[in-house]
Image 1 (tube, helix red, strand yellow):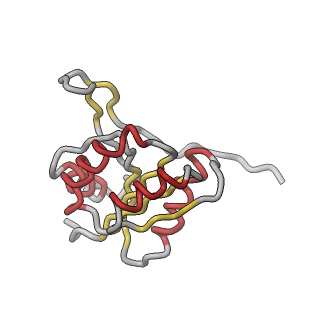
Image 2 (cartoon, helix red, strand yellow):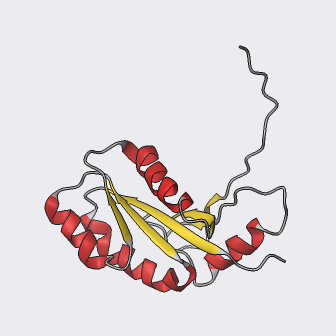
Length: 148
């Protein structure tokens, strides 16, 4: 079994003031499992950006000048995480997602349980329910023929 390496988590945000209280609470519940927390702001208002700075002062904050959408923001965070040679797992951590304590470590263990795995995803339950909303991801490599 691989010794646990460094986990980076990337969260993107954009004027999500209504979420910030729960987001902070849920982050506090699992922050001991995250070694590098990266918050990417997608060009929010100055007032909201200050709330993010106040609530996540122990995090790396990347301030985008404009809203490039989720993909651009997550890519900025992932690019930052990849600069740290000790990071060997990156978690996309939505600011509206709650992980049970220990779940991030379990995802990490599962990721490194089989050399064929390159990505894993959690099961998502409906809020205050035992009903599975989404059950992870299954991505495979496809044979691709490139034409030049």
